[in-house]
Image 1 (cartoon, rainbow, N blue to C red):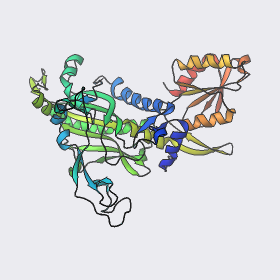
Image 2 (cartoon, rainbow, N blue to C red):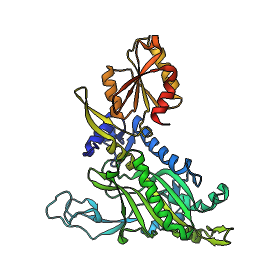
Image 3 (cartoon, rainbow, N blue to C red):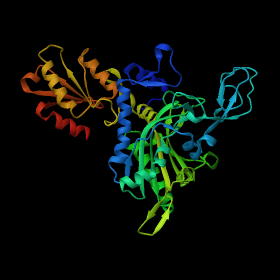
Image 4 (spheres, rainbow, N blue to C red):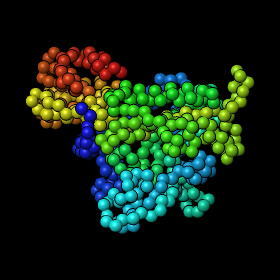
Length: 435
């Protein structure tokens, strides 16, 4: 069953090398995390799975990688400088700051007696810095709070060079930065995070159709990669929740241990962004449809997901505890595409006689997959370790392998074992993984 306590995943991530507190030897840096050997692989797999579905398997979406830093004009046009803020209040007793809209009541979360709050004021979430050696208004730049604007300002470039026409999408995966007042819940809400966003440009009359399409497509993506449907839902925003650019937004939410939380938003951004960037840059950002002899500014449907919180959801959904051979075990039942290692090669002994063959098998499989080579501890302990980090298959090389040129494949979820000739190993693994 999925993890019901966030600490189960936090502890596993630290113990097995998925996620570490950033700058831990200096006491840590609040809401920042470093991704270890396994976490960096899994996070990359999450992003690769998104690109595979959203770009590679489609002929109507292209991928770009836009700059993180941007001039004020970009974010003035997008509305971020004026509207991208949260309501901030201060406790007059403990002096801590909180988001007003996240307080359950007018009581201090720190349980301070006699606490009162200041009047709410807007707190802009943009990170501001300076470009060049001299600080000043002319050198002010911002770290992007979303990847979307890089796709809007490159609309004309992509339209010209990719030969696409609406409906088509521009996708991007990359870092974004938001100066959150109250980050928390492990990697769910941090000030530095990665987004997986796509702007899908459509004829204005088709916006609603494509909005429904992308809501369904994106929900199914999470289910296909292993999250049970009962842990997911689509929630439409109320009118007072909508962003200034949105004509309608729905969130795909996951049932985290603390309650329902957003994994991804699908928004109808209308043609707000293209119109604003056209107005501020004095460049045309429209499309001429030769078939209908019509010129229009496309509407946009935007599926925008957080890679880090998506990784957390996959970990929580995959976490399980069961009993094997009368011993309890922890297992991550990750979809093979998301697992950090697809295969682990386990020589039964560290003796030199098994090492050349084991290394040969590792070299053969690692040309295609990310493979772990684990030679420490008893074989049972190594199986448990690979189960806990989500490795779908273990390949055990024993002394009989030297004679029969065969190895044993052990399956993570069922723990069943199968003897396979080494000559057929790669094709058998490929068949079992499905890719």
